[in-house]
Image: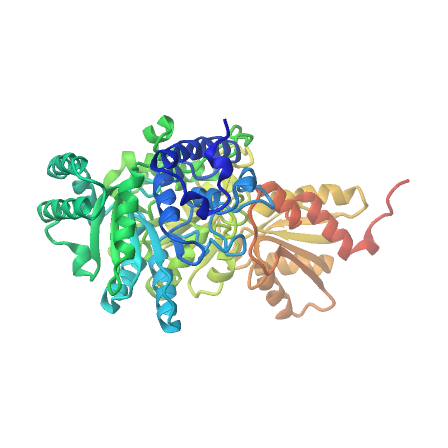
Amino acid sequence: MPKILDGINGPADLKVLSASQLRQLASQIREELVATVTNNGGHLASNLGVVELTIALHSVFDSPRDKIIWDVGHQSYVHKLLTGRRERFSSLRQYGGLSGFPERAESPHDAFGTGHASTSVSAALGMATARDLAGDDYHVIAVIGDGALTGGMAFEALNQAGHRGTRLIVILNDNAMSISPSVGGLSRSLSRLRVDQRYHQAKERMAKVMATLPLGSEAWRVGRLMTRGVKGLVIPTMLWEELGFTYIGPIDGHSIVELQAALNLARGYARKPALIHVLTTKGKGYNPAEGDAVKFHGLSPSNSNKGGAPSYSEVFGQTMLRIFREDSRLVAITAAMPEGTGLAPLAREFPERVFDVGICEQHAVTFAAGLATQGFVPVVAIYSTFLQRAYDQVIHDVCMQNLPVVLTLDRAGIVGEDGKTHQGAFDLSYLDCIPNMVVASPKDENELQHLLYTAVKLGGPMAIRYPRGNGLGIPLDQELRQLPVGRGEVVREGRDLAILALGSMVAPALEAAQLLAQRGLDCTVVNARYAKPLDSSLLLEVVGRTGRVVTVEENALASGFGSAVLGLVAGSSLRGVRVECMGLPDHFVEHGPQALLRSCYSMDGEGIARRVLACFSHLALPLSR
């Protein structure tokens, strides 16, 4: 018997299906999600939770004319399946395949590219305002999770939308989770609603009443009146209506019929924004994901190798435990990522000194600055790509006041399958230019623990960037030590040319030196260690001795480590020196396996060796026949 899903080639195909067929479709979509995501990796629990919501959206609205914006976008897999990408779905997150996030270049149904949280309402308000200025009448819908509502940007947009009275629909997908459990006062209010017995008892009574009535306007009117009474009991402040929105809900997010009724009601509002409060279960329909939504939020591909050395995140967390036990002045801050950053074990042992502020990177940095003014040493654990959101706070609140805040940037450089929005390609460029900031990157996991110890002892702002994934298997020293700020090291001596490498590029630079030795090129390899301040004396000595230099960094070439070396050489008395810079080119890095992407951008040993030979071929021996 053919599957209903096999006949879905676009949203129009949903509009002819019965309620029972839509329920069957939801079951088939869940099967497809589990099969594909467990093989390819990706965000499973969040997509399982929005199956019925996505079906309802596309059965009521007319995408791509109507605009649907997915906040964060990691829950858009179902949307992709229903908008003409079903036959390519097996390529999800594969190199050259479908992105794991909405991508405007991928489909006209992806109205806005997303990958960071709390952006959907702002984008939706911009689209709705453009519609009104153009005299058009399409609908604009923002789907935002309760975790993303912890981000202040969402409230800035809600405030303007309510003030302007712009016609748009905001769907609050309330599953009590972002990646880790949501935090904050709003989350607590929503959680109280989810568990309040008065709401559930009233909902059961409402269901019985509606069962005796024909589905239609009268049944919905009765349901709305009863729900309004429940809202008055449980949410007396009526936050959303105070902001200027018409509130609809709470709605069972796994009942397609209820969702369709709510969406049809909201689309009828002509002069006011509406907020639909939808209750869903993250991981719905797949018992392992329902039981552990944190673990199943993001899965690695089935063929990935998890064994071997500990990850950099784990080494960071272990080192933090050691330092926390010795120094009560230390505190740690995360923006809704305690598990991802490695802070979860620390939070269990020191719950009063570890702060999860929600998806609020700007607040996290300034909160840290406030702590630092009172004698504490805050360590802000954050992904490289997410620190971009707090750039003004890093400059104005931390560095301008020269406060001892440590920024640990996990997932620096090429991240992999999460793609453009998550590649940590710019942190060296945007941090190196800030006065008072020290920027370092370890060559391996052992150096990471020493740099972290150095940072908490420094007494000023310092950022440490390190890659996603496992370390190199280097044994960890038992004693932590401070590494002199602005000092690198020569890890291989050579007379013909020098490779100046930073952080994750030191190991491939050494591999390249071995390959080049087979062609008669004797290479010095320097572990620069610090992007700022540079070890000027060491670098100039090496550059002057060889006269030929290649810099290697896993960062955008513009304004990165290589640019700093070029500036150093230009300002010196050295003449006739040739410097070649290797790094990421001037475009956003696509999604794909880390090893493949590094190979594509010559960020592995063979790629570095090829580039050196291309630049300095006159020095190499010919290939043996």
